[in-house]
Amino acid sequence: MNIRDLRNLDFEDIKSRLESHRDLWVNVVLIALTLVASIYLWHAYRQDSLELERQIKDLTEKAGVVQKQASAWKIYHVLEKKFPQSISNDQMISQLSELAVKHNVQMTSLSPIQESSDDYLEFSHLEMSVAASNYQNLVDFTQSIEELPYAIRLKEWSGQMQQSVEAKIVMESLRLKNE
Figure 1: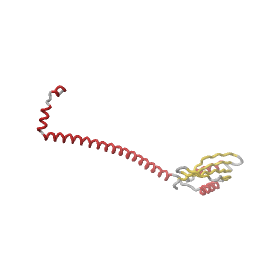
Figure 2: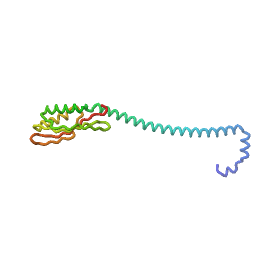
Figure 3: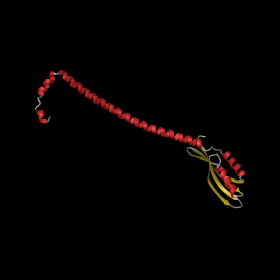
Figure 4: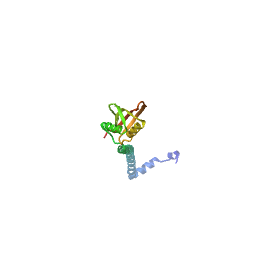
C-alpha cells in the first residue's frame, strides 16, 4: 500500500461501518486503554528495575568491602597470635641484666626508657652502653638479646675497641595496643 492508495479510501464508508459495529469501538477503546496502561506499567517497572539494579550494585560493593574487612581481621588475628610475647620495661631491664651477668658484660650506662606509640603499637626505646673483656662475650650477649622470646628488636649497634670492647646498643620493645 502506498500513499496514492490512501486517497482512494472511502472514509465515509469506514465511518458508517464503525458506527454500525459499536462493539468494535468498545474493543478499540479497550485495546487503546490496555496499550496505555501497559506502557505506563512497563515504564514504572523499568524505573523500579533500574533502582533495584542500583541497589544490587551498591550491596555488592558493600559486600566486597565487608569481605575485605573480614579478611583483614583474619590476618590481624593471625598476626596477633604469631606476634612475640610483649615484655614490660622492668622485665626488659631485668632480662638484660641477667644476660649481661651470664655473658660477663658490664652495663656501663642505661638511658631512661622513652615510650612512643602509633595506631597499633606501643614502643619502648632503650639506649645502653656496655663493655666486655672480649669481643665474643659482646657478640654472645647481643645474640642472646635477639633470641629472647619477647618482641624486642635491636635498632642500632656500634662498638669500639679500647682497653675493653665497648658498644652502644639501641633497642626497642614492642607491644600491641590491645594487650
